[in-house]
Image (cartoon, helix red, strand yellow):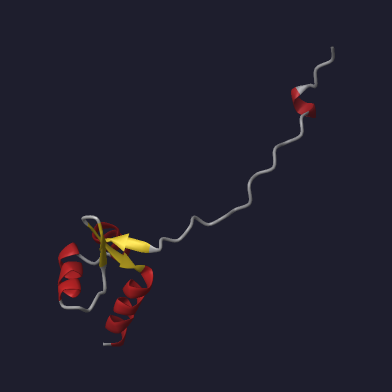
Length: 77
């Protein structure tokens, strides 16, 4: 029985470089971490109706589109 030497082995192909999937939603904590906006400001915007949110169970969620619209509204002002 003949064994292949380690140097004769074919190198494994590296998986293609894929960016990690982008989130569809944020929690208050993840939104604060991603934007640098304090949690209290996020809660104030949510309460004032400036930042749309929804709940899944007990967790408050923000769609990426709503976050972008909210941030864009502050960029223009």
